[in-house]
Length: 426
Ligand code: URA
Image 1 (cartoon, rainbow, N blue to C red):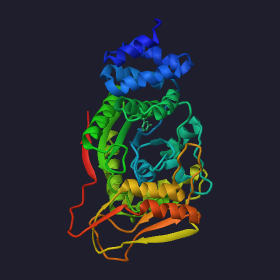
Image 2: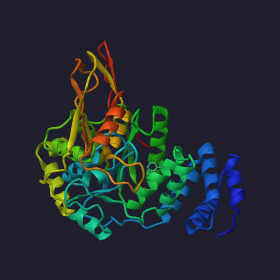
Image 3: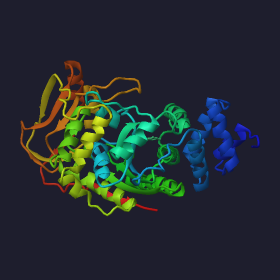
Image 4: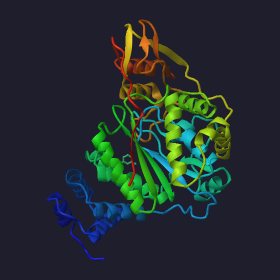
């Protein structure tokens, strides 16, 4: 490998030039080894933030991120593998329902997940509200459970695309998170290293999502689909609305309960609709001729859920933590619910204790919000709109303040927005 000058690489990108494969390989490898100064990588990230990466540059950048660590080898499983990634939303508990449901259809679902940060929740935090449940599995345990149960939801090991952690921390403090090539390579390097054969991406758009407009969501989705396909992973993206919270429950144990409701044929219709839409794409991607709705309705999805939780030490029948402080928030007027702001509800759940500000902060299992209204509902003064759950009065007060302006009530009926927006394929 030739030697490159970090300053030349930064200059090329700053001036909107194209980096060679060797230059990208050199710069990322040097960064992994600790031979590139943080300020040089910061400058390069900012140049990428402004000038982007070409398709070829992005492929090479992603390859080097994958090669910075190990790959989970899933080739010997008896079932086809398919996974889902969501770009993060409020009340997004779909993985808890989807992974066992798609396993009940005959696929293996390796969901290597993360924790919540800020107003969006994390799948592991939700499942950790189940007594005894274990997030950390070895690679052998993951493979074994995929064979025996068909679904695993566990912590992504430190070995998958480890440079991403370093780059992400740097992006966080250099205002370079919101860059499409950097987000796409970050997400897809981990999914490709995970070894899944197929992938559905749930790209959230709207007030409660990290991407607020449809144009940008389309660009992110097609960039990630392109990366997946060029790395041999059959990938489809579904754009979905995240203007209002998904379902009624926001908060760790509250979302587990709602997921179990959906797996038992109850629960909110939007959660069921999105789960089935993603499940249909997943079974189609791996060529299984099964309608996931039949597996939801005949209880097979729930059966796999119980086995998946037990396999990781959890008790699916255990009583989940319950908040000691609860309070209803009522409407101050009559009218029609025009909007429920997912971001404000997500922040309220976070303030109540369900989320964390820093990676190392603890979360409350019991805290959160239950939405008692939907957009388009008629409402009268004094009618409860939300139920707030917290472990103490201080958190309850913070949640109450944060949710105060989350609902807009109008006089006229409104048309509610569709949940499923667009599908992006290669
Ligand atoms: N999630 C990731 O894993 N990486 C990003 O850059 C953004 C969201």
